Image (tube, rainbow, N blue to C red; front, side, top):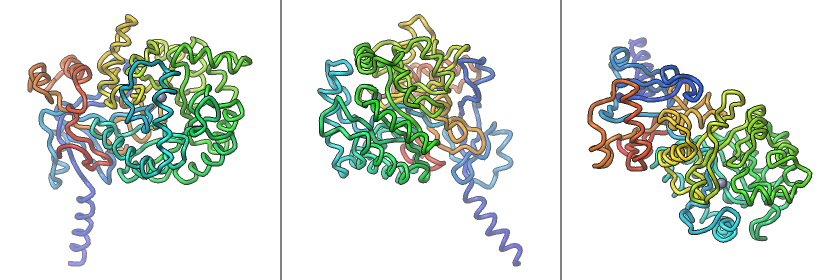
Amino acid sequence: MQRLYTDYIHQRFFMSSLKAFRSSFLDFIADPFYVSELESVRYIPDGLLVLEDGKIKEIGTYDSLQHKYKEISITAYPGMLIMPGFIDTHVHFPQLEMIASYGEQLLTWLNKYTFPTEGKFKDKTYAQKVAAIFLDELLKNGTTTALVFATVHPESVDAFFEEANRRHLRTIAGKVMMDRNAPDFLTDTAETSYQETKALIQKWHKKDRLLYAVTPRFAITSTNEQLQIAGRLLQEFPDVYLHTHISENVDEVAFVKQLFPESQGYLDVYDRAGLVGDRSVFAHGVHLTDAEFHRLSQANAAIAFCPTSNLFLGSGLFRIETAKSKDYPVKVGLGTDVGGGTSVSLLQTANEAYKIAQLRQQKLSPFQTLFLATLGGAKALNLEAKIGNFNPGKEADFVVLDPRATPLMAFRNSDATPTSLEELAERIFTLVIMGDDRAIHATYIMGGLVMGNG
Ligand SMILES: [Zn+2]
């Protein structure tokens, strides 16, 4: 009797921590920019994804796995496509309320719209309200991880991390450091930025799933002294990130040259401060030189490609083929860059990435765009051991996509499940081009439903 009771308890505990999902599954096991689709795409038309304690236990065809998991109830999503959660490698949570602000390019846009908006985030209650709206909007759009700018105020970082932690998100964020060329109400000093950043790292970095990024806004708004301080923080805390902007706009690049005449170029300004390493993420990089791409490759640093923002602010067309060259490959993820960007949807962002490539006579395949939004983003953030695909042991953040979400998408896509990679490529291309939050049927964090339909 005793033994049976123990078995029962064991079985109950064991079983209650297991979950399974049946649907079509798509993820990436290698980079489709460098190897063929056959080697990089994992597609299971009728699959079973098994989770244990919020992590991936195994994935395979339904036929091959179902006999092992007869005892667990299975959540089925017929007609849907399940992918790893989307990863946004560059976004500003305080700018959500000024998305779609008219008529300016980067430097005037910052002064006219961004800085006045960011001033409001000294008020923690206000910051908390916007952080909650922002994170729910991300989840509605299938984004489960993001690298996020707060504002110069430590309160904005506290508010953001509290809301992210409440939702159990794997998220990276940081306090903006800026000590010049911005209004007084938004500037810190080299010394206060050091003290405040250090305190925030100690409070938040590696708390549950949260991670910290040292975040100088860009070279224009930091003195050399402050950039050096940022480098010192990276030395003192070697596993935090560096997150900033680079070479977004031609006037910006010219101004940086004027401010740092001794530097060899924009990237060199950061390099001299010790900010270019394998945990550094640089947003934009539209006007980088070949030598700068080469240096980023050598340092194993990453670029956040932000197509909707680059088009909206008229910044220019990112050279994806240079970043993804075989000779000096650079890690690349997609960034929405809201509010310079025009949508928090990574599907819409992938859509515009495709069009930027078209304007440059390049072709981005549907698999390549979705790689950038998932495993590519995870690699850019050095998180591929934890998220980005369905390999066993990874955290189970995933999104259930509906390829027939709107009447037009249903008209465009039959209800038959694609059986070959060619059919799948066509299906997911329509998702990328036509899809947005309406195509997100459900979003799961650590195996738990947080948005949409169970
Ligand atoms: Zn930005």
